[in-house]
Length: 71
Image 1: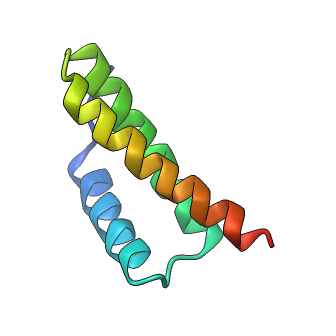
Image 2 (image 1 turned 135 degrees about the horizontal axis):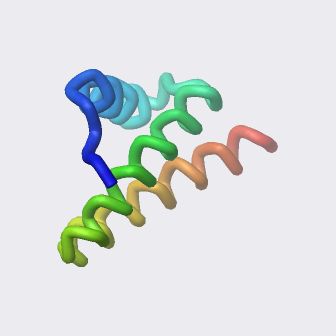
Image 3 (image 1 turned 90 degrees about the vertical axis):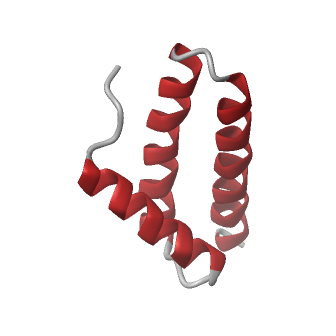
């Protein structure tokens, strides 16, 4: 599996900042989740368990945001 492209990394960073400032919309949150899933798979295949665990935590935050937005 290949890593994120420079454009995907830029977009992930942008979306992460939006998430931190709570101005992300559900479509952007889903896009961020998908980018994080790619990073998680890369970390797992590269044997970096700590990085994978951190990414899983971030994915959980995105899912919690999406769940909270549904209410």
